[in-house]
Image (cartoon, rainbow, N blue to C red):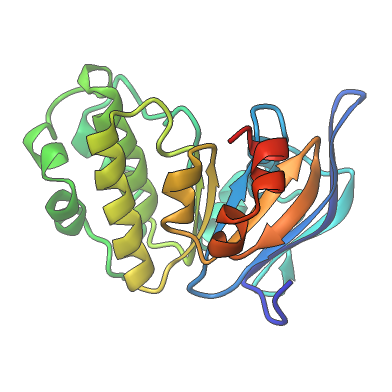
Length: 235
């Protein structure tokens, strides 16, 4: 754990009904850091994201952002504090145009990310800005989901499986955008199953299994740890 964290989860316990999904998750993300949370399907990765942004209410533990307790706050209030989300499955508005999807969430606060900048990073979105969300390919929808989060000009962006279901070339493009985000000082918590993709981007890695953190290290150390990658990541 870092001494001074932008985001900190301390002993988070989250349930779905009687099912104890997160069993004491603790992790942190420092200013300007990219942290990756890795694990198999059902390990608790997306529930961790949901517990941060208010989709799931932890029964025990604490989530702090910039030193303020945000545990269980409404999602809109958490977003207004400067936490952006690129959700699993994209969740774009399919009956709105690309441009409408983007402009409806743009932050009134000044920041580096503007509509022209998003279009510069994702020229395909500019080309298709009048198309409806349901007329986009999977890769284009993921670009739209990322652009939408960036237009909020958050301090921290949570990305839940951004490479899922995408062609290798599109995954490379998404990785380049994440690197650009990092260069501008934005912090990222990246949830992934694509180990190579995650290790190429991360400063630190956590591995989660059955709702518990079972490993924390640098990406280099994780890459060289065959016991952990085989047992918990199936590599």
